[in-house]
Image (tube, rainbow, N blue to C red):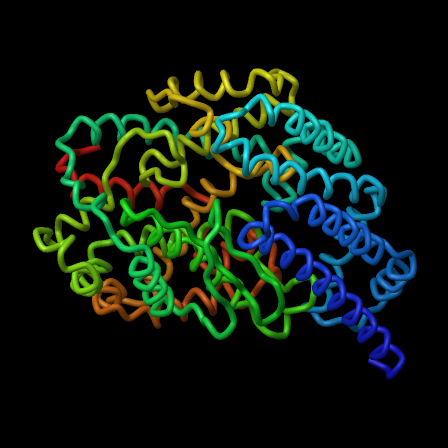
Length: 504
């Protein structure tokens, strides 16, 4: 590069860092809204978020920035890494310029107002209050998709936004394979004798639960000097800056698993973000590559590790030391079986591994029906209950555990919100199997509470790359395979046939 070219690239990097910082400020406002914001401050926060979204959109669509990108694209001296940075930046720019600034501001403000309304409507079981918000969210979502007519199906647009390269047809094929395999597995397991679980619902002091979960999170490799954990309605992970990756959890005094597994889940997300190579931070590649890959890490650390027999060999003694009275009559084996109980339930975030994907498939189908016009928002609550009776044989007593359950649709957007969870489950088994093949004796490590080799392999093969490679290429490089449900179904069959003494 000549000095002029060096300066031009430095200018691009400066612009990318500014966009990343504006995004981080927006995440900070959102994090505060979900954790500490006083209830009376909600309207002002929505206004602030709308202003920031407009300012960021203006910077992201600045014509001068567009000319910088075009000039860089004409060069022939870029490295492969720079070429990928530029490709992602140009894609982001091209997409952002299709949205009018007024639309971006209105959509952002609506999202804040909708979320604030949901935080009071849900505990009040007031779905009717949310109908106008959801109707506006649906209208805005369809309007957003209309700016991208190359996607014939609005769901294809939303899926591509979170899981680049995937389509509704591909997701539907994966879901069909899973549904066909999981329904008979759930039937067989739920017909077998259930394990003992009474001890999970004794009184466990809140702070002691949080302390135990944070200790495991630290053992996993989460760096608390570059993050922290706080309480919220609906747990999440967020990046507020290059060295600020935070997690949240929720805790119930009479549910030992709630805080622990929420913490381990969000820790998996945070390990990914904290593991992104420093030379990618502040660039278009400085984060997780897709919703599915991101979710694979939360599910890997929550389930494949945190619900495994080796994990409880390492941690049951420590848990019993933390709660000696509550667990005095409980064995390690009983704990392992209890946290892997399979039961048809109403709550997605509390669902076991076998039924969880049926919760996701239900939401995905409802999203598709809303976007296609086959389902009106006013009928969503009834449609939810009917779908749960069909897919899980359950009906919620109220909308609190029905259409008001998840926060996703109440942030102002409908579409592409859920498929990443199931894609993540599938990918978690692929990544774990590859890590295990490369690290013989990995389960013995986990049985000692030693996660260095697993974390190291994932950091090298997944985390460090950020968005350096498209999702399909990252998966192929790490595992030698394309997306396949086979390792995931193998894992589930082996685990639950052993736990419940059934054959599939």
